[in-house]
Image 1 (cartoon, rainbow, N blue to C red):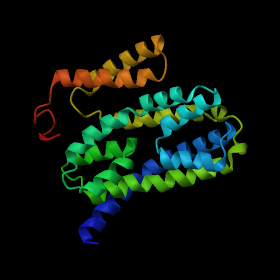
Image 2 (image 1 turned 180 degrees about the vertical axis):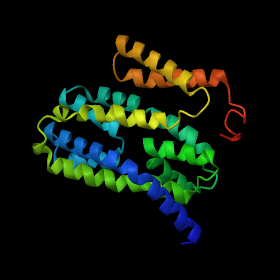
Image 3 (image 1 turned 60 degrees about the horizontal axis):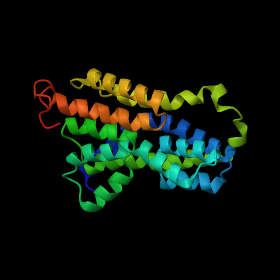
Length: 238
């Protein structure tokens, strides 16, 4: 292992440490909620291992508890996870230093915080495979461990909402969103996405407000056009 690889990997791990605390709460909550909704310990842990996407895993639990058809569960989880298609398209522009094996595993580990960190690092022209995997792959074992702990101790949390845990997901995504606030037209795109999402939620309900709200933001951003280098502080390639 070269010294530069080790330095970049450790930097990615260091940058990821604050996020791990948020991920720990999510994973424990999912583990506890999973066993309280009828899943076994191993089914709960297997969900985290295979899906590795907290938002869609919670949606799956909600639908599972309502005994809805399997096709509707799959369609809903797809709609919630649609944002990962967008993440992949955006991050994929910056993976010129990655070989095909690194790209394959890189997309598997592409979570919400990994996307945010990758975009911010790419703006600096410093997204390397070592940094990416130091950040993104570190979250995976943490997610599995805390899911297992939550599932094991699930009976101790009888009412997650009473502890305010129902707000964790909203706070988590809001924190990620605020990390991009220095970008040009950020507020305009966010407001457009929020308005469309609210309207869709009112008339169609969840989870379509997530997908259609995101698409509205994308369409507006594309219509506005690519920022100039001066608007981006000189980062012309982002």
